[in-house]
Amino acid sequence: MYFYSTRNLSYQVSIDNALVMGIAPDGGLFLPSDFPPVYPLLNNEPCTLQRAAAVVLAPYLSSYFSHQDISDIVQQSFQFEVPLVKLNEGLHVAELFHGPTLAFKDFGGQFMANVLSRILAKRSKRATILVATSGDTGGAVAQGFYEKENVNVVILYPKGKVSELQELQLTTYGKNIRAISIDGTFDDCQRLVKHAFADREFSEKLSLSSANSINIGRLLPQMIYYAYTSHIYFLEYKKVPDVIVPSGNFGNITAALFVKKMGFPIGKLIAATNSNNVVPTYFETGNYIPTSSKHTLSNAMDVGAPSNMERLLTLYNHDLQSMRTDFEAVAVTDEETKKTMRDTYDRFGYIADPHTAVGICVAEKLKTDTPKIVMSTAHPAKFKKDVEQILQIKLPLPTQLSCLLNKQVYKEELPDDYNAFKAAIG
Image (cartoon, rainbow, N blue to C red; front, side, top):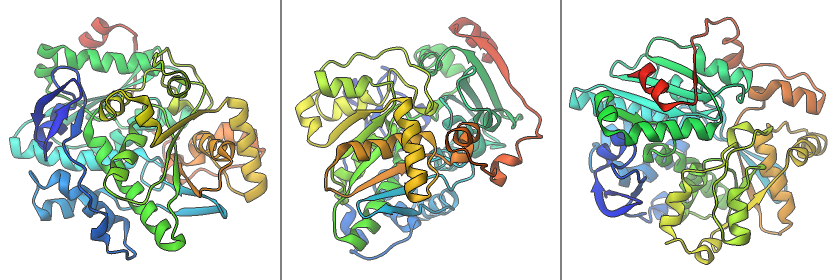
């Protein structure tokens, strides 16, 4: 197994180099050379999340890590569950938010911390993880890498565009975690990160690596919950579900495609976006035109230039008709999101955060008989103020969040300017 650049298919690296580099020297993103059909290894029998993880990850990691290493990484990284909650006969919600920071990004954050620290230890090197976040990535990365001896972390996030609790999850660590508020949008933060990687002298000086979904190491662990949920759903219902993924930077749904290619029982993949609808527009018109992002209720999906479209376009050779055989993309407004949150609570007694509500709204818009699984990406308490206001309820804070309220805050503020950013962290 090797990994190649989306911009030069002949540029190939091993898994350890793909993880440490984060992005190819030509600015391309890494893709795996193969998607091994491992689903039969589960033997049509019930399995744990950890068992699914070991089966799915082994082909991608085994060229560098031993069988025992992979087993240890799986056990250390995925110590939480993925409940599959039934709303009605044709609609389930897969809750991906039972990790330490209450968001699906914990799969990537825990995995990358455990994998990269092992690789760096073997190389006797340090690295700086540079990451842009629209809300949840930064908290998961900070938690995963906190006090790792051979790693420094720099997190960029858009000033005033993450929830108060999300900001506390970024800014209450200190030590090897630096949180920097950028006066701009998530796309501005992401552009600064990409500029830093393209600045070869600077990148090499700091030994930069990434924990955004531009790093293939974020997508590999996200495959796990698609493999697990599609497997247990098929065992129970003997049907192949469509999967609806709240989407911003499109890494999560790219991971779902990997799993589908590996033979797991997944039907159509539906990207559910908010008003940042560049991909639904592409599916409608055939014109892919990234734009500046708009601030919405589902802020972690506020991405106007989704990085992982480069991976998807490469996998489908820029053939929209071919992509349409596997994908749909549907946009939802904030008003539709609010209505769905209220309707879901009234009909099912289920509290959905705004991002999950985008997915549920799309499921109901599709009006097909195919069963559907909506990936629920964050705990509603992370958006406590909005959820309470929209549903007119009181929402208790889980311990993972309430413990942040009295912690010291460590944060810096910078303009959206590469030279200022470079001087601050260089």
